Image (cartoon, rainbow, N blue to C red; front, top):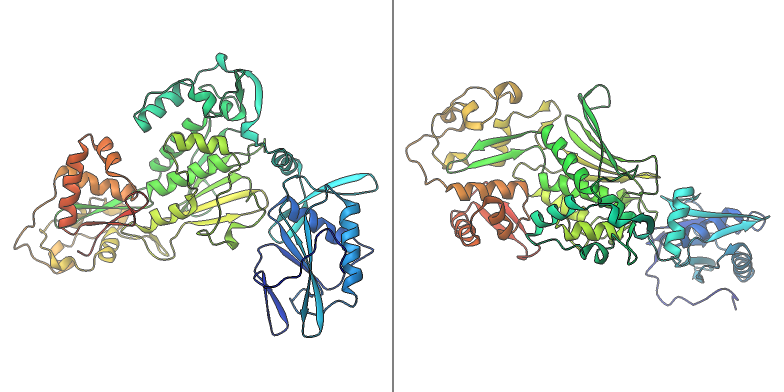
Amino acid sequence: MYDCVELYLRTNKKAMQIHNNTLITECSAYDFKEMLERKKVKSWLKSVSAFANTDGGSLFYGVNDDGMIVGLENPQADADFISEMIKARLDPVPEVQLIPIEHEGHTLLEVKVKAGMLTPYYYYQDGTRTAYTRVGNESVECNSQQLLSLVLKGTHMTWDSLPTQVDANKHSFIILANTFHEQTHQEWNDKYLESFGLVTSDGKLTNAGLLFVDNCTVFQSRIFCTRWTGLYKDDAISSVEHRANLVLLLKYGMDFIKNYTMSGWVKMPNYRLNLPDYSDRAIFEGLVNHLIHRDYTVMGGEVHIDIYDDRVELVSPGAMLDGTQIQDRDIYKVPSMRRNPVIADMFTQLDYMEKRGSGLRKIRELTEKLPNFLQGKEPQYQTEATSFFTTFYNLNWGENGRIPVGEVANRVNSTLEKYPVNEESSEKKFGVNTEWFGVNEESSEKKFGVNSNEQPKKVSRTAQKIIDLIISDSSITAENMANKIGVSKRAIEKSIKSLRDMGIIIHEGSDKAGYWRIIVKP
């Protein structure tokens, strides 16, 4: 029965549920078909091609567009025809399972397509061959860039690993070598070029190598940076284009963002608490992701950094590799898929990213650890047909514009009255210009209802620097703290113990993968 490419009778229904005669599928990519269209085979075979070319998926026959089960009149004949057409019209033939499902006197048929290893899978008819890919819930014809990616995937190659005809000995990697030393405190060895996949065994640069040489000439290795006036793309305060190797692009991009974002601070009883607009490390991780995972086969594309009053947006060419839309996924369950593994590994060697592929989750966690974080201000991710977007929201911006830093201070610590503070004006207290933040000149005593009978012991300079570093990067290690501050690791550990004893900081999670948190209500 059911002579087809491959068949099995399902013994459990983990991939779908039926409630009130309505099919609820748990697979991320699927199409419902009320009946089999025998005269319009392209209408459904393109979905088979698309599923095989992306991350797999299922067609359910005998189910209408609303998910209602109507059943098939002759599922045996339909299964035979589907199997025949897949073999006749798709090249290569994808791995497909035809699964009959019985429900209350109705028989529906699941055509389960496995993600293919021999991409691209073409639909062909009348001498033409067309490959399809999945974009959201649609099966669309592959463009030239998508087709190239599928060809590379099918040959188990990636664009960044492909060799060029450029002699490596005609180029230098001084910037990369110096950055490697600064980040890892290890000496660079030219043997790394081959082991990291930047140079082939016969001395030719790979595409990844071209992106890391000092005088990078890859046209698409660019970033466009713009600071817009207000909340929309209207007039630009500043706009600049950078074309350079990936190490410099990361630096230039971060410099631009830091120049056009702000950070206020509030004077706590015994230390200074920074209240930045954004998490520096979260934005850094985001920019690294966009440089690593962008589609470099798109010649006319580049990474864009757009800064508005209320947000920072990063945009790069290339959607999700599996054809899904990130806004429809749980980012804590998205597997690591690397479009450019050589570039990703190089950034890992530079200590710019972790190997475990947790970038999206880490970006959110870094933001959520800021003392002035508000629910609803989590970084957001979105994909369109050919682009990936990351949006960071200004934590010091509200519906009526920039929030006065005094209000932010009240929000992050509603128990300031527990601590004596002096009678400085708000401008001195908060370390910001009142014209920018709208802070009035009330005394601290009037503003917070506290007096200055006693002064708690202030933290040391090293301890204050540790607090500042934790605000900037809540995942920072003690060793990195020592390197950045210029003191011994032992001195860092002593200051950390003091801050912990004072109830100012705690560490959440494991020593290797956890985060520091500032306690604003000790």
